Image 1 (cartoon, rainbow, N blue to C red):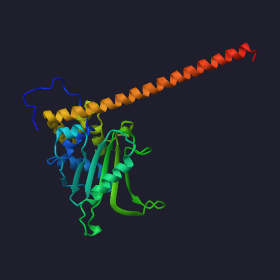
Image 2 (cartoon, rainbow, N blue to C red; image 1 turned 30 degrees about the horizontal axis):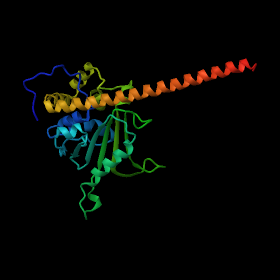
Image 3 (cartoon, rainbow, N blue to C red; image 1 turned 90 degrees about the vertical axis):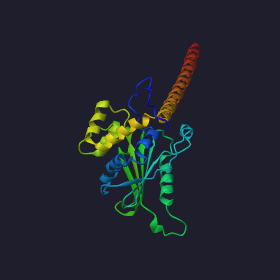
Image 4 (cartoon, rainbow, N blue to C red; image 1 turned 60 degrees about the vertical axis):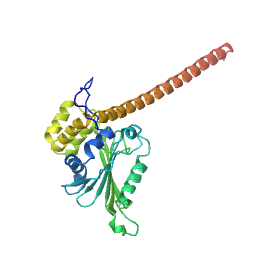
Length: 281
């Protein structure tokens, strides 16, 4: 990768978007990113009853190929193993493709089963956690942080196994949450940092309160100083902006068409009323 050492960008970047899946992977998913990844995982998992995580091993199997990334033909999930052997998969999704429930089960199952070789005991399968950071509202009716495990339907206290655990971090719901506890809740600090709409002053505040977030922010700045990485980041940002513009255009066109149909129908109704009046109706 080439580092842009001698040239400055023609225009300064606005705040980097942490929900850009490429940038999130480069910030949290490579060797050396353990401090910020540990901080984030503790913010998500400790409130659910897990002991604080002291060490993580990042499973860095990705090959940085710019053409593949720009073509979106590879997955940019962050994969890690905790000190107790639990495996974790983190994915960022900003597009609602109406398949998040089954998608997360598919990727969870792949990670759950990939460690077991033919003929080995099923007891060797590790606990596996999927964490999804979403830029849209899912699951409907859920809150900022929802967690799912396998439980008996009529008795939620009866759990089948700890092997499956799936989390959803809903950034849209976070934006509407009035009750925020940055001092006492580390996940709130991370959500403030993850939300691209957070004001700069708040970002500086949570960085000052949480060293792991400061590490993550510094890592983003370092990553984007690389010319190739910046090109991928900007291309993916542009693709998302284009997608939103296309949706907005389609909605406006549909509304205009509906209004035109409604106007035609109203004109036809008025014509019929006039004709009825002529007939003495």
